[in-house]
Image (cartoon, rainbow, N blue to C red; front, side, top):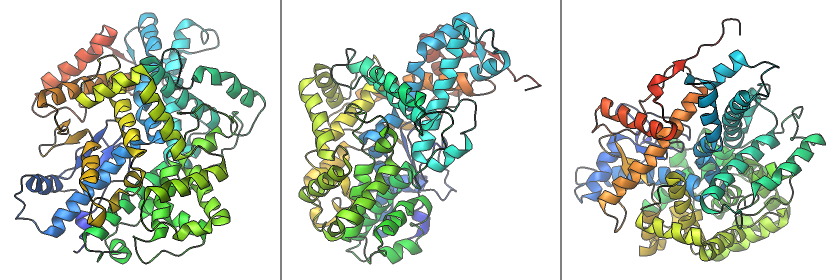
Length: 551
């Protein structure tokens, strides 16, 4: 097998809205804001032919590379809907809106149909009105949207937070972590646990975080200088996807492809390799000869632990002062690397079987050394919830039928997929940590094929560049389409609320998931009607506010 760089270029994780055009080099991307997996048209054609058992026009090389692209992007779906760090970010937009929903309605009542809210605030707020009901609503909306945006920046790419530390809406790193976790947990509580009987009650955190700010604890007050890890979630997410993709191709090629070929094909650069370089630097190791090295297996295990903090969710916070470090994937990863170097150097050569025993033995030892919740602990917590909480038992039944209660439909679907992932992961941790070693070769079984298909990305772009639900076993197409309709109806409202709060100019109805099978007129009417159903007014009727000239 030969590697063609033109068939391997994936987009690094960002928030791109557009389709991948046929003349672009990018072969695939996953957009976590809109929960969409996209593929290049050429990749679509190959995979469609393979599915129809009619791929004679393509070489095994082209088929393998197309399959590896889909695999790479599907791992990103796992990261955002299967890891605890990813879940918090996946709930980002709905949490932003739902946390401020009453304030949006209050603004509409007191201020009227005016957009964007941030410009109205900057044009009109002053010391005499800043504590009025109107501007309390305005401040909550604007501050919430900024806090979530700052949180995502700090988690995904820590260095980017330097650009916003002096903005008027930025307070402290500790505050943005507190707000993001509190809002996401509040969304889950309102949907599944209104009495806070099992999900940590984030309302009880306020006083502890306020005390840290009052005591001027570094990182928790507005004069703090942020100490930033060298790596972020984007480095870990891309590293996990890329190295599993390489492992998959290595085994599929009868182990003829290895690091040199992957380097020459341009797979190891930037965020795809940054976490691995950091890992090798801390451990004082050179790059191994093979991607199937125990050192690479350890690297992937450290990423798995790093992106799945248990502090704050599903467990309550014990040490508030260390909450940021305990939940920041980049910081956790560096700490884990240091523990291996200082305490467990033998782990560098220990993983040879990609076994559940190796997974749990090493993860338990490393987490115990850092006083972190281990994968076994947080997974067991989710299993306990699913076995004992009636609201989650109901959710899992909805998840099996892919038909969800309409109340907080989007949240139900995302959390249902998340819990299903955890229930399978506790039994098969090795598959979810090292999937590249289990989808080809001697470790591939009917069970690994089943798990991969079961946990495929739910919403994908098809060959016509339309977004639709994946085909799921034993689920009728009508159910799939109905659930997708409810899901994206909610998402259109969340997106228009984001525009209402922050975006200049008129509302943009040209949203990236709208089907080309419908006219723009029909699609626009559907989007507007979703908004009207929530707020009772049409987005077409809003007055657009411009900044004052002297600002």
